[in-house]
Length: 73
Image (tube, rainbow, N blue to C red):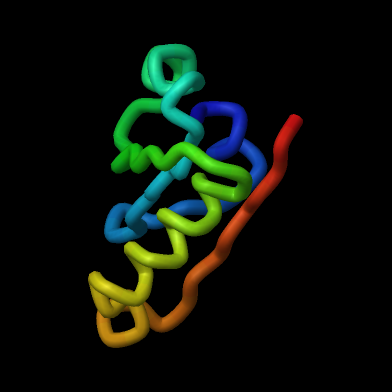
């Protein structure tokens, strides 16, 4: 997370949510601090759990802007 924060300016009110495959949860949990971590199995499971959270938690009403970074490697 510290590498990300050195590259991307973040404010004190910013929220971080990370979606991962359950097989990666332990490894991600060791290096990501201060973020909500969501898991889902299946192809594109991490992406789909993030999209579902954004809709269910009404991110559009709570934030002016949302940034999604996605990658498998």
